[in-house]
Length: 193
Image 1 (cartoon, rainbow, N blue to C red):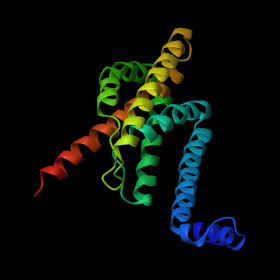
Image 2 (image 1 turned 135 degrees about the vertical axis):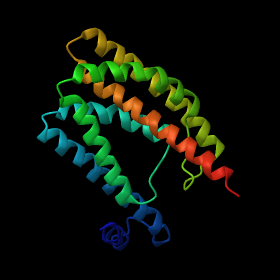
Image 3 (image 1 turned 120 degrees about the vertical axis):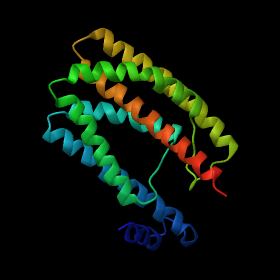
Image 4 (image 1 turned 30 degrees about the vertical axis):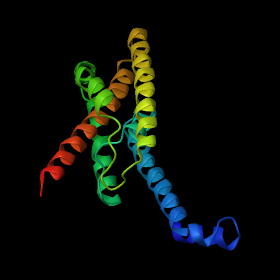
């Protein structure tokens, strides 16, 4: 589909043929994000957790973009693992012990916040980044993290919004897990001859 869209854009003179591969990658990535995030919203709709799923994405996506971490090598594997992640996140919210899961995720921030602060940004081995972008992403990650922690504090103080606190905290914890896995795997691969 991305090839057809880019081909049409070339025919209409909107882009140059020389940049075809870049645009095909960008369109494919954009469509992949739409399908993946759309799946989360479908899960949220069926489980009556749509606002929480939206909040999860609002916290997860900006931090994940700038923090980096582990990435699957194939889009299908990424989609499947993302769907599993979404289902686990929603299951934590709709079970009878949701308040307990919220408290656990608040406590897990004691690991996640320092992990994100010190490990991010962690570029993917398939997509190395120049030092200037790493420096920029480090600053942006820390700003986003501070803002999100302030929002979590406000949500917590408002009360009766424990599910929103849960979704916000689990987003930060998920980013920290992916950073940790990415860091461990990068050390594993660096140690191999």
